[in-house]
Length: 167
Image 1 (cartoon, one colour):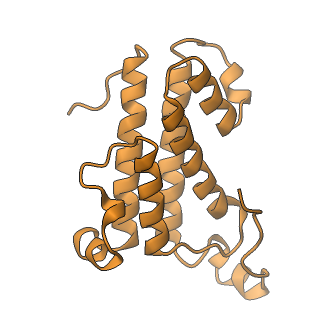
Image 2 (cartoon, rainbow, N blue to C red):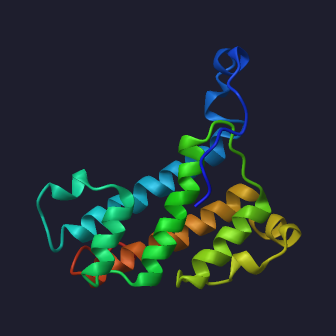
């Protein structure tokens, strides 16, 4: 994994103008909400085999490792969930990080290669088509989140946890 280095230095104007969370707060908020929901689903899945509080002391990769080592998720799912965690870490730990639509499409392709089910393979669209069909970066990220969380919810169900994927 690449080193997490600031994209630029923090200036007083950043703090004064409330831009400390970046140039695209909606995209950042969506990344964080997807990650929070994903981690909550992983915790709930772990609780199907270990209902104690130990899980709360584990970091994200330790949670996915535990789930993979016990067979509750596949090795591919672990790689996909860890890839999204790394993606989220750039927003959480790299000041001024920005993401482009081609980077989001690359993330979708990577997640799909690790077994995340994308009904329409959004990662294989060109940026122009993805912009047309999904409305740009936020729409593509929402699709990534939906597919990632749906798969995590299926692992929860398969582990004997709640069924949350039916309306």
